[in-house]
Length: 189
Image (cartoon, one colour):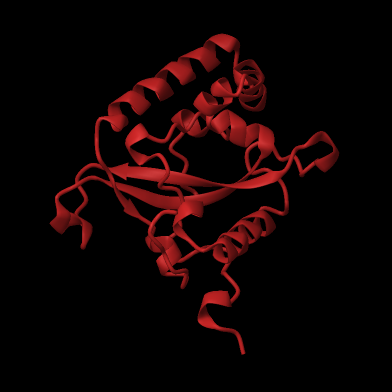
């Protein structure tokens, strides 16, 4: 008998929006900087390691074991893996309960995507820069989207401005799509 916390996850989590893409123009790959006020509040730090393993494997499987941004498979010999990445919506005036009653903005998990190591690094361009990989990540951003360097720089400037704006706000965390799938949400570790 399967215990509730170990049951198979559906390919689409309850309430997950598989079409959610906050990128300008719907670009497949974009810089998605998590506000500084939300650092260390990701899915992985808020669920048990065994549940994270189930979630990430489900995400890889439903993507056909390919990156959802560039279409490439994992290439272990080149140290390119598949990784699960959260797509967040930021709701400054939530109307749904219990969030409306708190009177605070909400960082809401809307979607989980499968990204290769290169695309995931690009998505977190600030972290890529701290690791000395900014140019590599930036070049990958432009290549995947078919952008000129000028278009890429404009996108990065917009992403940085949005990061600065959102970082001035304290956000409540909404992981309801995990709860609705029967995954226990824990205090961050």
